[in-house]
Length: 278
Image 1 (spheres, rainbow, N blue to C red):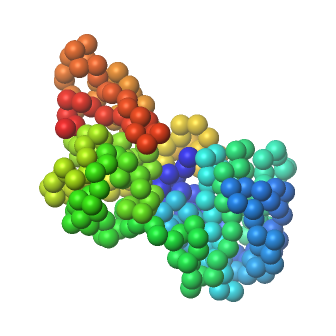
Image 2 (cartoon, rainbow, N blue to C red):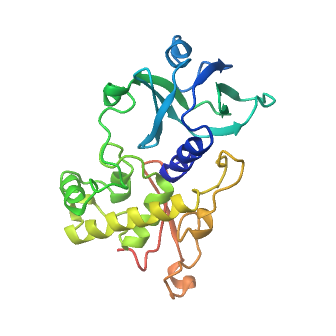
């Protein structure tokens, strides 16, 4: 699933290529995604000009001149293709936006993505954006905030970082990498994490996400940037998907320690160094 850095990369690619163009047409080849695209979606967006782009958690929000916004989630396997003219239509090309500055194609084999609309000035009343936590790359995420949230729970810290009501959009890959940077085990219970450790986790989250955005995200399975190229942050992963290997900062005997460990928390794979992360 595209996580925050991948979604940020897609948003910026749309902004640079399509820019502030007018949506002339919307072609819907498949209406049934995670939720059905509203019947009046085309009516709400066609003829409107794009005036700004933003990312809210893992959602791309495109604000229009008519007071509405397109709310877009990539799901598990969604990707965006951008071209100057109408491209050949491929299987799983579900939605096509035709603008006066190019064509956007939404491709999603598994159809877990989402495309809908909401009034711009009521964007946080949208069911998909209600009750989301703070954005991890803003000053809203600080040690004091995280510590307060953690003290009210007794769950593994990795699960808490993936709770969109606490922090919106980190994602599984980057939570593992951030906890490695902070030297905190994903297994630690949140109410046992100190304020100082929360500060390290916040710094780890923000450092990892910044580097991942700069690298264009991580390409592991389905994700590609809108120009078709791959992100390359996967080459900078320290622990994610590296079971049994030695982590970059450890000089332990992996025959004794077992190297990087994999555990399942909340149904998601988590990776950590048992020597450095306590």
